[in-house]
Image 1: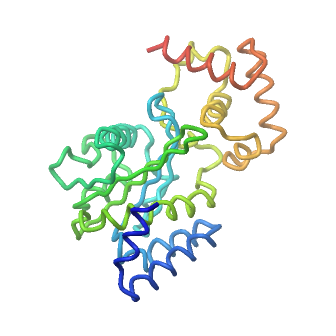
Image 2 (image 1 turned 90 degrees about the horizontal axis):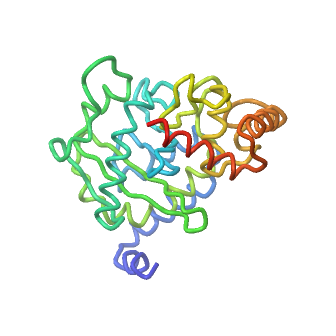
Length: 267
């Protein structure tokens, strides 16, 4: 906090006014379109980018969720491929940890942040081929021990000039994202990047129930899971009752532990 105050004390009146507007607008964001408008507004002066990826969850256990925000055509969460994003996000997270959880930038040719070019490509993969620089930073919630990683991509400017701005604005970026429900289609894979057990290794759980357990694992409530998946809270409860019965457990924590153990044993 002292570091951030020192940063602000060196800014001109014009920059202070702009930061104030950016921060004030962030606090009022509630919808995805409001988030996109905010990201494409004055924030671009400090964090110029075309694509933002927010990834959260348990990176060590490979239980990662993400949301993509971009004005580029077709670059959307619901049209992306979780399996191709997994190595990218895990690699960026690991480097962030190795660097002491400080913001850093990567350019083309520096550890290669682009997705694999082999095979079918989603719109995101194609768009990333036009990007020239990425900037990475994250926050860890000390209460839940959950990390949220933020990655922005720019096709023009070198983002190393934005490192200080990212350090200063990240809490407000996080605030804005946390107030918006991730765009996850009801019948999708829930954009959870995790190894799914084969049909014979599910322990009697359906694809939907494994999907629900992925969200339970990262701390989502029944109400949040229902909202994300586009189903009722009653349906979520019914699924959980069947999951508990199938796994022979009585609590959410026991279910999470048993599913995690079975996934490790299946690798």
